[in-house]
Amino acid sequence: MKALTTEKIEDFLSKNLTKWKYDAGFLTREYKFRDFIQAFSFMTSVALTAEKMDHHPDWNNVYNTVIIKLRTHSAAGVTSLDLELASTAERLAEKYA
Image (cartoon, rainbow, N blue to C red; front, side, top):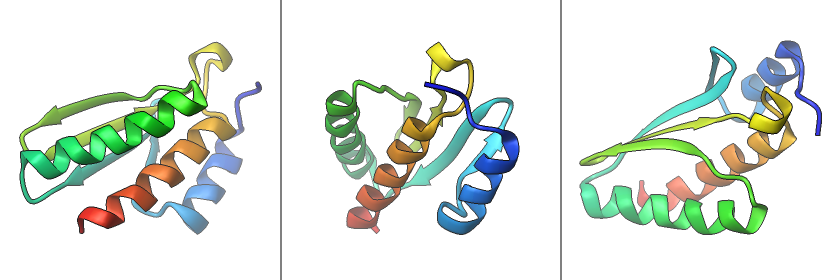
């Protein structure tokens, strides 16, 4: 799998994932939930999808906040897998809004 160009990544984000950022070679997004249970439930739902994709996020959770960073390490950059997982996370987060 090949890393996408900055232009392709930024174009996709501007059209599809406006709350995500491309920074320092990663797709990043911070989510805020009502409480820890919602944050952890969201992480669990993303984890199940990530496992099926065999593509795992770099993330952090503190109480009601989840920060996700995506990058395909084997491609040394962001790939279509990262865009797919970010899109899935965005869709899953809607359940907790």
